[in-house]
Length: 219
Image 1 (cartoon, rainbow, N blue to C red):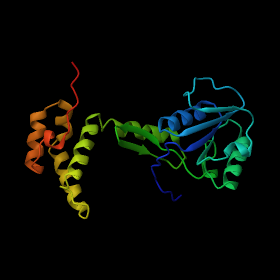
Image 2 (cartoon, rainbow, N blue to C red; image 1 turned 90 degrees about the vertical axis):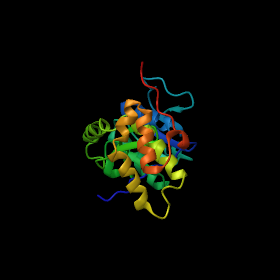
Image 3 (tube, one colour; image 1 turned 60 degrees about the horizontal axis):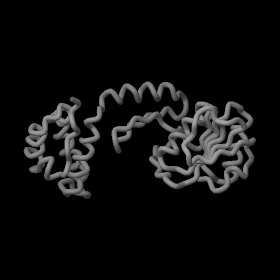
């Protein structure tokens, strides 16, 4: 199956979730966490407390529940309802995710781990979400919280135009050098002097000049 991995900025956009089981509630929380406007359609009241700004419609699904939506998630435990949601979304030309039949939908959500703005995502095209989560957890162990600072440094270097926009090879080379010099480990150790030595030796700049601070070490 050919798919296009993509990150969507959905803050303020209406997304509809149909179904308030464990899968549906995970979708609601993920969407709300990304700043989306969320409408939950469910025949039974959610078992867990929802974010305050989630619109809850206690009713059977109807196509008009999708009015104004940008994304739709069919997440009930009933095959016929999920199929009806998918048909209604397709008829309205709205992208739909179908929890129990991924091939019936337009997109899947990967298993995600975040380090600040660094997002580690693993997808199995909906074939095995459990395996995607397992692989994500394996990868996550390789990238600790120090990679938040690594991203801040990389972004600051890019902003200083040390990595010219028209020469991505230079961008990759300088970041490769920093990683090869064990910069993530030095950041994790909180060794600011060593971090500065690496940065000065390869970039001619210090943390202070990049306006980046190392995270405080636990006491």
